[in-house]
Length: 304
Ligand code: CP
Picture 1: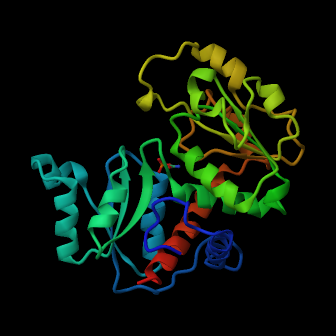
Picture 2 (picture 1 turned 90 degrees about the horizontal axis):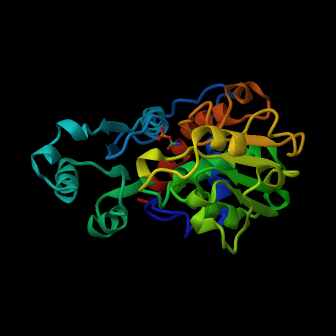
């Protein structure tokens, strides 16, 4: 396991499975909550979120709390960054004050340079523009493994705004490590330009064809905040062609599982009623996020 979690390029299948096992081992006997283990009382983590977050930030915070780690929720809007201090100088100050690890979400790929510069601080990539979100991919694999025997047998369909999704970028890294049978990318061509010619999977703009016998369907929201120009499709056409709902999911396998990293724009990429289906694992993803982040913190702190 590397010293930082920046992406999943240097992580092995064995390490991914070990993280999933560790995350599951933190679950209580009835699997409904996580055990509190005072494993790292001398460690301090600071979160720096330069983009909004609910699941990632809170789950790292809860994970740290469960492990006895001191967690500093850095308030960017009331920090000296507002007076012109750079992110680099902010992290330097944190290092001097005794911060051991930064959990960083940033619209750009600055984390890689920061990790090279600050040898005394460990870094976790909690979302890097449209480029990566490795802890999300790991919790997605954990959630799939709860329902499916073998990754190598899986037909996977990913539907939505792929081009702006850091979740799908990291998922591609992860799934190539653990194995898969096929991947179909589906969405409006304006939102899937990077996936139309792709060696990992195939692009299929027709949702009905894309979902044929799928074992895993991952829905992605349209990231309006990252769109350079207005979409050439109306909301109603988008819903008609790409919304996942009880009817549109029919071509998938009976035991298909439905994932979405959140936040969900209900009524657009997903209908509200699918959340109540047994096949829908969105709540499991949120719950597994805490365990996976406990596992990530444990493994990274064990490297030092
Ligand atoms: N999945 C995810 O990254 O959600 P948040 O933006 O709420 O952290």
